[in-house]
Length: 332
Image (cartoon, rainbow, N blue to C red; front, side, top):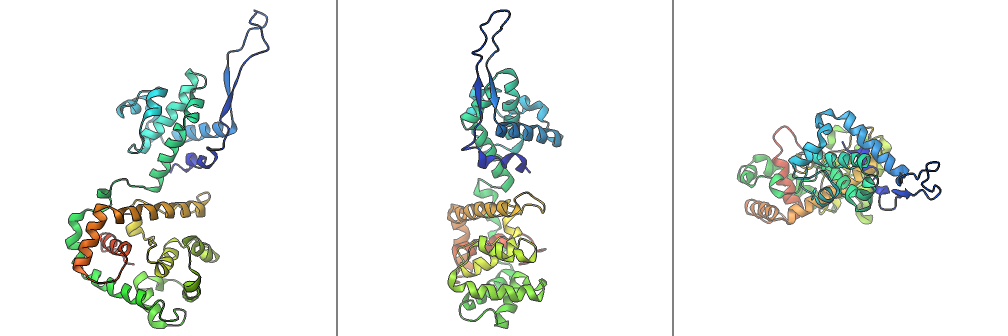
């Protein structure tokens, strides 16, 4: 949603923001009045300003014409001292956009005000917060999963069925030639719903899995490989990578979207593949942080009590629980 703004983040650390123009030519006489100092802003800053105004125009529901009121509602004064000092880690998109627009508007009343926000790193921090919001980063574990739901989820009949199928896949993936073994392929297709794909794709998928057993495989490699079919196979690329390295998380919307708030960028999004890779990286970070959290450890203990000695990674135990919390309408 905020990509029109956050796309400039990569240019900020090494970018030029602007420079003061001081009139050294005129002497202050009536014939030659001295021009007041002003900042000549770089193309990067002008691009940023245009993006802020474009967002304000395209999103009237934000009410950004009242940016000063929005700031005050968040305990922020419209001024460089208060705005630079604010911790935006818990602020929503409306508040952050009000900060950005407030910084741009401040330039109208005080030359160099916007330059100060750039030089102090405030603009970068605010844009990074928008990128977090866009990616769906959730800061507290209690928003990811309600532990009170654990008993009901672990008692689901589908949980045991899923565990048996997954155990078969992980026990046999390195025992058999997955490019030829029909039993393995059928179980995998049923568990991950790969069967809805054309036969040519499935044949290639298992052949690629077999080839990568020895060499290893990254999510980026898998995503790039399946691009020849004309689409970015985010979910099935992650499932293949996880099968060969169960310490890597699966991108499944039941978990990724519902619990962590990460969505695949829409078709037509600029630099879509790059954004997907960045989003997967952040999702993996957040997933592993949750696994290591007190809530994550509670999920793992409960899983082990219900299904002892599975041999699954802690990551997968958490994944099983979170996926079963997604409702009955979806299946892997």
